[in-house]
Image (cartoon, rainbow, N blue to C red; front, side, top):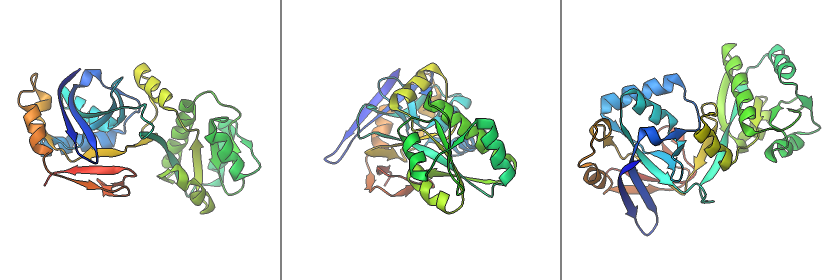
Length: 280
């Protein structure tokens, strides 16, 4: 349920911001406990929700901001600041995070191959082709020759396999980095082990959120034509049963802004779409 909504329209962008009941929001990804706890501390210290949660306007499925949602839920918030988008818009792009693993012992690789029933494939290009076209759920990309799963059921299974391998790799002290899919070839050539799951569809993401069958943390990423950041809405509008004055507060906090081009950094991350950075 949406209680408060404002719309910002300029010559270069259109953004909607809303206060939405948390009970109506549906995450599609799990969260990392240490990141959730970090956000809880930050919210309580700053007494604001800094960035809106990006949601599919038709279903309430959370596209970006699962950790913010769970942090708000943990502090007893009744509502969240959200930015609803039309998920059917082709300009809202769905991408995936890929796991790149360094310092992996050969014995660990053998355990992966045996545990996942992977089979060899002729070339790296062929492995990319089979997985990217969703004919296989997963590829293990290594310098000695790529390996792929035997079939395809759904993308969720591939990401769950990827998550299991990541946890085992971290357990033995390997370095695991999240990279973009376009960076996978570079890291294979550098000698890293790449866990490369098939790309999900938007339909799978929505279905995952509505069914509560979550993708592992940090599985997907979304590129928006324009993304609002740094709104900094005080928590008092999110914690109480009423939201009086919230619309005016939002208008005040969104009067001043800068539009940052694609490739700009914010909050320790580089974004591929434009950012609307609020605050004077």
